[in-house]
Every structure is written in C-alpha cells, then in structure tokens.
Length: 464
Ligand code: OOG
Ligand code: NI
Image: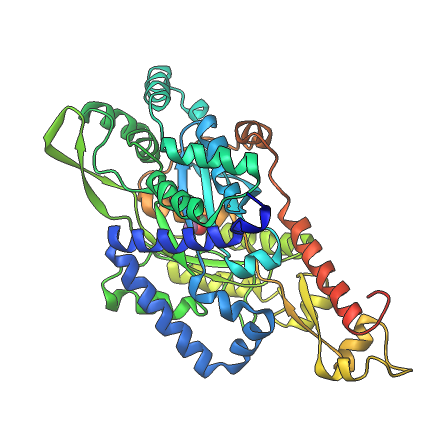
C-alpha cells in the first residue's frame, strides 16, 4: 500500500486516547464526574482570566485542552515492557525520561510514552506513565519465584494486535481500517479484569509483600489504573471535589499556586474497592483496590537550572516539614511550600532572563509588518522589547518523580510505606525496554530552537 494511504500515528493516538476515555468512563463512572468538573472549571477560568485564555491561544493549547489526558499502567516483565513500547510506537508514542520510584518505597521504575514533536503533541498530547515491577527488589525468594512463574504464563496482548504491530513495523504504517482494528485490539490490554489469575491465598501472599505486587501479578493484564484530565485551576478542583462525592488526597503534589504555573501539579481521589474473583473460589468474591482518578495542572517546562531550583526548594520544604505530607500536616505543608517557593520568580520575563524555563517564540503582527524595514532590532531581546516577538512558556509534557511517588502512595494507603533504598537502574530499565529513553530536556531545547528558527524566518532574519 502506498505510504500516503496510511493513517498518521498522531491520528491513531488521538483515536486511541478517545477510546480509552470512553472505556474508562464506563468502567469508573467517577472519572466521568471528574471530567464534568474539570470542564466547568476550565470554562470559568477562560471566562474570568482572559490572560490565561490568551496564552493558550498563542500556543494552540486551547485546541488540545479538551482531549488532554494521561494514563498509567504497571507491567510485570521485560518482555511486556518491550512489546508495550512497540505498541505505543504505532501511535507515535516514545519513551521519554526515566523515573526511579524505589527510593520512595515503590518497587518499580518507569518512563512516559508520549509524542515528542510539538506538532504531534498539538494533535494529541496523550501520554502513558508506564512502570515496570522490580521483582529483584523483593527479598523473599519463594514469593519472587511465584510471581515470576505467574507472570511468565500470561499473554497481555491479543494475537491480532501483535500481528498489526508487526505489520506496521514492516510496512511503516497502517491503513485506516487496520488502524481502527488496532485501536480496538489494543484496548483489550488495558481493560479491567474482574477475574484474578491467582488463588485467594496467592493473592494474599503477593498483597502482604506489597499491594502493588498483587496489582501487577494477580491479573490478566496491566489495567489502566487512572486517566487524568488537565485543569487550568487545580486549587478550584481540590475544593470542588468533595461536593461531587469525590474525596481528594490530602495535598496537591508539585509546586504551590502561582500566577505562572511551572511543571506539574497533581491531585487524586482514593482508589476504589472493587470486587474480584479468585481462581479457586469463583463464587466467593474478594476485593482489590487499584483504580483511581487524578487531575493535573501543567505549567512551564523548566531548564536544568530551573529544575535544580525547583528540586532544591521542594527538598527544603520537605526537610522543614520533617515528614511526608499527609492529612495531619497538610496546611503546614502548604504554608511551607509557599514560603520556600517565594524564591522562584513568578514572572515570565524574569524566568526567561534568568534561564529558568523554556519558551516558544512568535512573530507578532507588528514584527511581520516591519520585516523589511531597515534599522529594526535584530537581537531577540531587542525584538521582544519592540513588540516584534512574543513569547510563552513551553508546557511541561512529563512527570515528576516525587509527585508520582505521592500519587502512588495516596492510592496504596498511607500505611504501606516500604523501604527499598535508592535503587535507580536506568541501564536495566533500558535493557528491558529494548531501547534508550529520550532526554526530555533535549526535547524542550529542540522545540524552543525550532520556534526561534521559525520566528527568524518569518521576520526575514538569518538567525535568532
Ligand atoms: C502511576 C503513578 C504516577 C503520575 O501522574 O505521576 C502517575 C501509577 O500509580 O501507576 O500517574
Ligand atoms: Ni498520573
């Protein structure tokens, strides 16, 4: 088939993201309630804060806002991870970043599968935070062997999806019909399974070691454990959740409230208790808690310098709190966070001048009108000062390890703190994945560079 008859990976991703959202709404009705709340609050923000709406118009994010969401899965073996990578590649999603969660007591390491080019992100920013269980961190050899044995027997992909992945790799694309088929087949991997693959006793053993281990090992597949819409005002969401019957976690993860949001703020509601059937007692249901809801607010992508400042301020906040943020110290944590983050300028011009964030640059009407005039400014700062170039922060497309650990913990229950020490092992993760993960900072830098080039071209300048 000629390549022009293939559907673009971006469009397959958009279809898949919509299909996942529909499936999750049916499986977890509270997710639907959350979507309504988010949409209401987003409309209010756009109506009452025209500068926010205007910024979203410049960057085009206004068009992607409604379809913006991320999900998360946890896989059990290297082979599953490598095949998931091939499945996501069909949709133009590539592994970006390495996250070590072991230091926070969660025996997994992770990456985010997402589109990498701003044009693709514009079509569909759908991302999946994907974690690989680290059985090597479990010190009970009997249990490790049990888990390995159970995992080696399962097949989380349908035969047809495996065929379509291979076909796409061979032909370098899928036709519209095959793409539709692919989306439907791929959905099966992420579905919830009411039937556990283990006996009640095995489930208990896995669960006693760590609830996460039971969640990964005891089921037929890596059910999507949450889908997360993007809000423009997470504080309003946090306050608005209880009235809708959604109990929020105690604190919002990430930076404090700001006029110009940075990185990522997240909150979630507690995981649902769901009935499951064990393999040896189908008539006597047990229960499992895994799936939950989450909301995110995205802000500026930070440069290495900005990120270092963020990490430093967050560490200092936590050190001052002297413990993990929870129900009992939530308001003190919030106050400490605000106090410490006063050192992070809340002003786009300052953030730009100090090299704290990445930006996107646009030629303005005024700049375009003056493009052939002699004597106009030719430096970036000069063009900005003259109103020939406008800039907005690049949106952060990734995740944060400390926040992710907080999200994990909030739905594992506060009682389940485990110790695994710090065990980052990016090489082992990449070996399991079968490829290297991309460096998110390089991606933002490239994106910024492309916008500068486009700007220079539009303004008839050799370079900027
Ligand atoms: C993933 C938790 C992390 C996020 O948004 O930081 C996450 C999980 O619970 O599997 O989704
Ligand atoms: Ni999440």
